[in-house]
Amino acid sequence: MMWSAGTTYSTPPLRLSLQGTRHHLNNFIPELLAATSTKRLQIYHTLLKVIAHKAIPEGPGRSEARVRKRRQKFIP
Image (tube, rainbow, N blue to C red):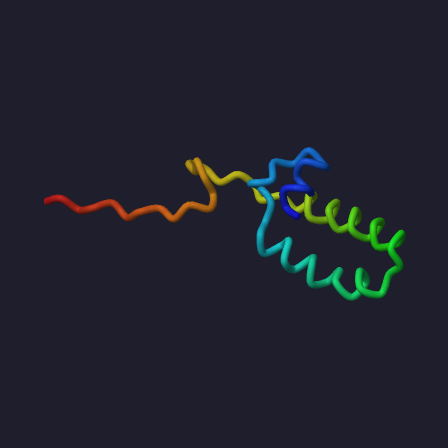
């Protein structure tokens, strides 16, 4: 879903928030379940738009935002 949102709305998919996507999806699920098939497609595209517009700002000195960094070893 993050990849679809990023590519559809020209946002780098790796800059999208995983937790934000989960939050928005949980909020949209009741509407998706209650909608008809044509309305469901419109709601899905709205969901993708909301996800794509919540990009994470690029952090300084990071090559990959989702990689755990190792602590430097102290050598006396």
